[in-house]
Structure formats: structure tokens, C-alpha cells
Image 1 (cartoon, rainbow over the protein chains, first blue to last red):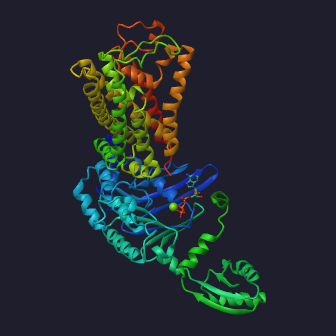
Image 2: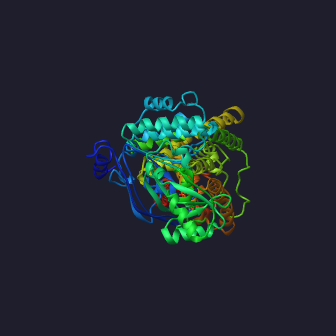
Length: 323
Length: 282
Ligand SMILES: Nc1ncnc2c1ncn2[C@@H]1O[C@H](COP(=O)(O)OP(=O)(O)OP(=O)(O)O)[C@@H](O)[C@H]1O
Ligand SMILES: [Mg+2]
């Protein structure tokens, strides 16, 4: 609308000085009454990479995305896309594409009309809309009412809506939700392709396994707090070992006391220790006078690790997030 | 801004709601007009023995004012005003019900631009509804006047057409009432029930109370009465004996009623829009 907005898009859009557009989340906090949905969250999302935004249900993923998109006002902190807050981007659909929930369509409006309504705001016409419907494989259902679409079709329509302005940044909330394995594979290839063009892509999920093969980086949150951020290989690198003994609680205490090794109980009385050093675990068990019934390395079981990371009580935030 | 307006207008016309409501409204408007036309040159409309003073019989003979009453009968009866009210409310609240409001604010982050665009789209729809309403009412009313009553339709009179033109303001205002209520309440069912409840039930109750109490000058501030008084620019009871006290239920000029209505609509719409620009969209 304004000239300052026009200036903002120059830095946020394709014409920035660095190739690609970075997302910067800085000390982002949101309270809903007494509920702390997001607590002092800081991370970056890099261009040319796919970042998985992970956390269990209620972790604060959607709230964070909505703050980044200017829909929810942060209690404190900032979210910048290409150096500016979303609400200051003059032609937002051409800078950021987003899909928040697959159910956000008027059931009586056709998929094509939904995209045309969006396109109008950015001067995007019917030709581009039809091209997109083709791209996501919705050509045949385009003129049918969206109320009759399957979950997978809605996800595709949401993706088409996100891509309408050919934006350098994509924010997708649970895009794999409701997709069958074939659909997930299709999405993976599609996102890979988009990412290879240098786009910045952030996808949220509560299941690491669903995005494990898609993402380059992960940002894991729990109870609104950052748990882990970095390339996914670093996660793989953090291998653990499983140990079975007569008194797992005592062993856990001993591991923590004498070597600072964290551990958590696994099924049928086993213990998973966050170290790959089997000898260390064996020595400590011997010193503590505990028998070892089983001891083996667990090479980077991501799902286990994800549970370990997100099940850990995280201090002050945990009371806040139960709602 | 132009893009946002085009988007909002396309939203209105890409679901079935607008023509379904238009159809229902047209049928009702035609029926009420036919009913009014059937009263011409009878003494059914005689207000002589009603509570309050003698207000005259607008149907005693066919005057320009009578024609205005017939061709705006649905609005004067405060029945068809409920259609633009409900449509305005439904159009806004369906954005919240189906959560499309997120997409709307994502494509146009300046929420005031969205609000103004919506108000314009809703007003454009109001103009269309006014045309549909006038066509249905004139069709229904004139058919009875010509076919049954053998009375002149008075459709050659400029004042009759002026009244139909003022109908456009009535529709825009009632659409904006709906828009404002929808923005304030957001919950679709609650907003429609409260809007229609206030417009219909509360107004009838207040009208009865004001008439019984003979608070004629208070009556003219009710939105429904303002609408009727704005539309009827020519006195249908001209030449009849009426209680002068009842005259204070009208403004002297039609545009005064129009102005009051527009102020009401602006207050509702702006306060709804203001809240919307501040609230989180979750
Ligand atoms: N409008 C709101 N009012 C009150 N509390 C809210 C609101 N929106 C979210 N919350 C709370 O904030 C916390 C984070 O919710 P959020 O939806 O961001 O989580 P999420 O990580 O997206 O979860 P999911 O995987 O279930 O989608 C939850 O405890 C939720 O109950
Ligand atoms: Mg969520």
C-alpha cells in the first residue's frame, strides 16, 4: 500500500542482496492467557534447504508459524522474513507461500475459484491458476466444490495456494497430514525440486519419520521451547545404547553421577543411554555392582531420539503448555 | 486495493449463497407487494381505531405514496430487510467458520484494506439485491393493480422511481449492518440469530411499546422505521384527517432518515472492523 512497503519488498523478494530469503525467529514468545504456547524461541531457516519444524501435539508449531505470518501477535520477540515482518511485505503472496491447515476452504467454493480469489489480490489471473491446478494434479476436480475433496486433494489445493505467487519462501503446516504413502512420496519429490531452486522451505510435523527423508535441517520444539536445531545428520550422529540390568533406576543415577550420561527408560525395563561408549556403560555398571543382561549400540534411531528429546520435562514451560 | 476488492467480490459470487437468498427474497418481496396492492381502495389499512391517534389509511385511494408503499412493501413490512442483513452476516462469518480468514489476511496483511474491500463488496451485493427486490416488487404489485384492481400503476411518476432508487441505500445499509454484526460476533449461528432477533423481534416490540405509550418521536430512530420513512417520500394519506401528534414519527426529509441509517451502519461496521484488525487469528 505504502512506499515504505514497496521498499520492504525489495529486500524481502527476489531482488535481495543475498540469494534466497532467510527466516529469522528471535526470542519469539506467545502467551494465551496462562498458557505459554511459545517460549523465547530463536532459530533460523536457511534458503536452499528444507527445514523440518518438529514437536509433539501442542508443542507450539502452528502458533509459531502464525506469528511468523502476522496472524497472531507475539507477546514478545520478532519473526522476520527476508529482514522484514510479514505484515510489512507489500506483495506477500509473491514472497511467502503458506498452507496452514488443509481444511481451510469454503466447502461450497470450487478449488479453482478458491485460487482465483487468492490470485485476485496479487494480480494473478486464470492462466496461472490453471497451470497450478495441473501442477498439483487437481485438474479434473478443479471446478468441483472443495467440500467434496479428499484430505489428499485438500493438501494439494493448499499447496497450489501456497505456490500461487511463485514465492521464494514456503511455510507449510503439517503438509503430510492425511497423505497416503504415495502422496508423501510425491510431496517429497516436489519439495526437493522446489528446494533445489533455492527456495526457503519450512515444513512442520509431529512425526519425525514422515519428514525424515525430506528435510535437510530440523528444529525440534517441545512445550514451546527449542530442544534442538541443526542439520539432520547431527541427529543421526547422536547414537545411543540400550542396556538391560536388574535395577535401571540405580544404573541411570550412576551413569549420570559418574559420567554425566543422560538416559531414559525404554520398554520392558531397558534403559537407553545417550552415549555410544559401550565400554563406559559396562564399567559403570560393574562399579555399581549391577549385572548386565544386554548391552548394544543403537545407531541413531531417530524416532527414539525424537521421543527422548521431546519427552524430557523442560522445566518451567511444562506446566504452561498443558491445556 | 483493487485486487483485494476484486477478490472480495469474487468470494461473494462463487458460492450458492447469494442467489439462493436472492431467490427467496424476490419471492417474498413479490408476495408482500401483491398483498399490499390488494388492499388498495379498501378500508383494511384504516388506522382510525388503532391504539394511538388516527394515522389515516394509506390504501384508501391510489396515490404516489401508496405506489411507493406497494413497490417497497417487503422493506416497509420489515421482512425483506432481513435478507441483506442475514447475507451480510453470513458472508463475513463464513470466513471464520471455514477459517478462510487466515488466507484472506495472508494475501492482504493490512487488515484495514481487507475490511474496506469487504465493505465495498458487500455494498455492491446490496445494490444488486436492491435491483432484484425492486423488479420482484414492481412485478408482483403491478400485476395485481392492473389485473385485479384495475388501478393505475403510477409507474410513470418520477417520485415512484425515486423511491425505488432510495431502495439501493436501504440495501447497502442493511448489508453493512450484517457485516458489522458478523465482524463483532464472528460465530455464524450466534451472529445471525442475534442480528435477525434484534432487527425483527426487538423492533416489533419497541414499535408496539412506543405506539402504546405514544412516544412517536422515539419511533423514528428505529432502523426499520427509518428505512420505511426514507423510502416513502410522498405522503400516502394526503388529504386525510390525521392526528398531528403522530407526525413526529417521521423525519421531515427522506435524506435525514438515510443519514441516520448510514451513521448506524458506519458505527457498526467500523467497530466490527476495528476489533478485527486487533484480534489474533488462530
Ligand atoms: N487461541 C488459543 N487460545 C488458547 N490457547 C491456545 C490457542 N492456540 C493455541 N493454544 C495453545 O497453545 C499451545 C500450542 O498450540 P499449537 O497449536 O501451536 O501446537 P502445535 O505444535 O501446532 O500442535 P499440533 O501438532 O497439535 O498441531 C497448545 O497448548 C494450545 O492449546
Ligand atoms: Mg499445529
